[in-house]
Amino acid sequence: QVQLVESGGGLVRPGGSLRLSCAASGSTLAINTSGWYRQAPGRERELVATITSGAFTNYADSVKGRFTISRDNAKNTVYLQMNSLKPEDTAVYYCNAKTGWGRGESHYWGQGTQVTVSS
Image (cartoon, rainbow, N blue to C red; front, side, top):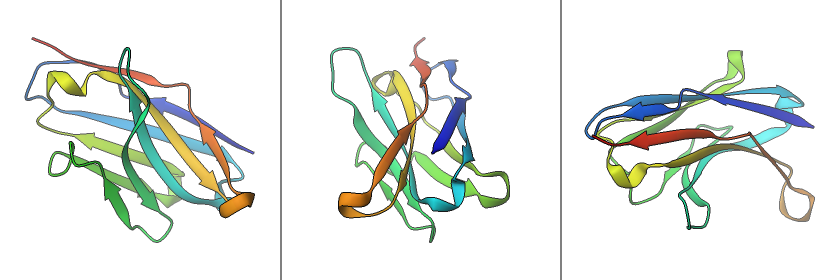
């Protein structure tokens, strides 16, 4: 089992920056991929960015060049640095951790943190 706690959301003006944090506890050594997803009102949850245990990263096209995902293994924490924020980035952001592969994989989710981009 893995527990995830997000922090760092809030209200920011367009063009501003925020950094989200996701602290993991429990069976953290089993995590092979961590990621951030977001869900805006009336829309499905979508992938924002992922990072593997080997530090390979993947980003949604909509955030490439603006967002950066990183991890601090010593702190069992994954970060999402968000720059040049746009109103369309407004959503609840969820941290995700994956253990196992294929049929044996499990996904764990945090409780979500609200990000609002508005003037």
